[in-house]
Amino acid sequence: MAKPIDQLLAEDPTALKRNASLKLTVIARQLRAHFDQSVVRLGVTRSQWTVIAVVARHPGATQRTIANMLEIAEASAGRLIDRLCADGLLERRAKDDDRRAHAVFLTEAGQTITTQLAGIARANEDVAFARFDVDDLNRLNMLLDMLSENIAKP
Image (spheres, rainbow, N blue to C red):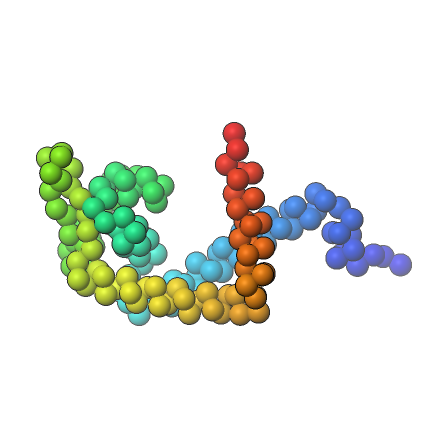
């Protein structure tokens, strides 16, 4: 009689690693898609809300800094910032210490959207982690930190 797939996986560390890697990829995609569907009513795209989130966490960041944080080209960041400024969600201000650079800040409307994004994120997290208790979440975060550290090693 053939062994069930779960038993085969449990006996093969390589298959377990591959299975976990695939699950992480799929789950990340599911989380992004669910969040994107949830924020569509706000009229912002994933690219736009990620810029808004960075500026909310780092008020006064430059276009270069924002691009680096999002791992996108500086020109792409510039276009996104231009669009969000035109929409009244962000504003550029001259930097005191560098006349060539501009600091980017949320406007009042941008702060309102940030609050709405945070509420949507909390609701999505409540769904995703519905059957997790605090110990589960602590263990998951510890394991994800370990995974991140392993990947970051040279």
